Image (cartoon, rainbow, N blue to C red; front, side):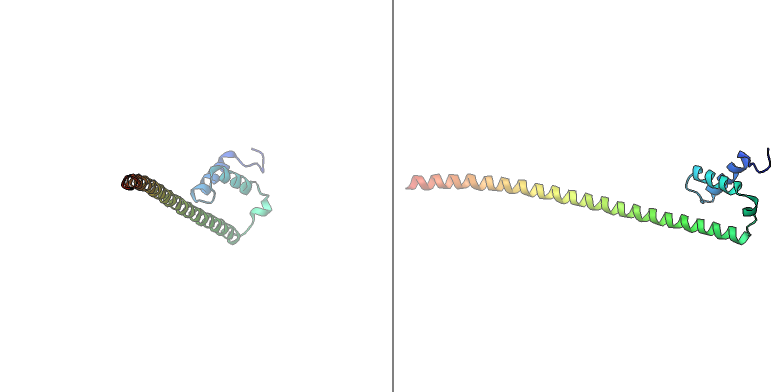
Length: 123
């Protein structure tokens, strides 16, 4: 292997570690980050452990924010689904009430017709 070239095995090992530590959402993202980390020029690799720890903390914070956003979105979706179900139930109840009212109007109309005929006979 030529100097400066990173082996696929090292990239994949680092990618798997990043994914396992939840520092990447997918193995593809982990692979891209691992490749970027391992291909940086030597001078950039001389960063202090403190700087690397800061980068890791930043990545962890980004992950936590993403998880929070996802949980909020899931909660919003659940609330909307529940409201949709409740609205559907209200509509079904209103349709049932309307149908019952129509039947009552037909019954009363029929009774009115009978009473009108009786009244007409008495005249």
